[in-house]
Length: 393
Image (cartoon, one colour):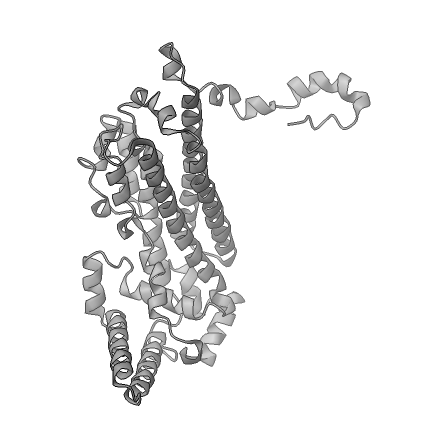
């Protein structure tokens, strides 16, 4: 970082003392580099058997933890915004911060490739020094999962409750307990979706109109199938229509949806799922453009964390194979592979929205009333029902 006072070389020498002492902290002081750059403790070197790649291993994982800290910082701020009165300008801020998290996660996914420059034999040279340390003991990653909305019941069992690995660390256990009791992002997003304008009964009852549109679509597809001359094709098309009917019945029948929630196959409430479908279908409307971007970024976060897990699984298999135990006592590769399922996807319902989409020609047209409400909301009319979408979360 250059000194802001050194704008020309004629005064550089005379102002050197001012820059170093009176103009504020130096680059290294501000970033506390003395602590960061001296935080790499090589156990192999302490045992008079230095292993070159241990330094890479430590620096890479420290970088991960710094990025985890930044993600948590952004995530906490987004949760705070969702918890309060949400203004239009704050929606833009949410988009910016979610996008920042997405870009950081992309860095973390690519960072695995740096570790893969280390060969299995290189890793074996210092692996014993790691025991019983394990990535499973990353407090920040567990906090990140909880704050996003990973449920305890969805976690793959790791010998015992995931908190047990933190032993008697009261500070860590307190942070974990707090992260489990405070509303995660998934819950706040769910409440936000439940307040989407146009869901309630009124002049424009989206859910009723959407159901009518689906019935019209299926009736037309059934008629096409019935008129098919080839019996084989006719049977295939009718079977496809029946399957589509079952799919839509699972969202139109509240009891079926609730049963799927009980089995963990769906996470959002029935009302929130309706809101998500509405936003997806009407994403071209100016009012729903930003909410649709938010939903896409939430899926990006889930996708990138899954990709990071997957890359980690492949790296572990490459380094220690599929039969060795992890340094922390887990089954290693097999445990990590089990975390790739949908049980760890927080926003799995958003991924499945495409199942319920219909062609644009069948999407119910927004009424003049609801369009006016959305327009009034954008102009700041507090009497608008559409305002509830962002303000009554």
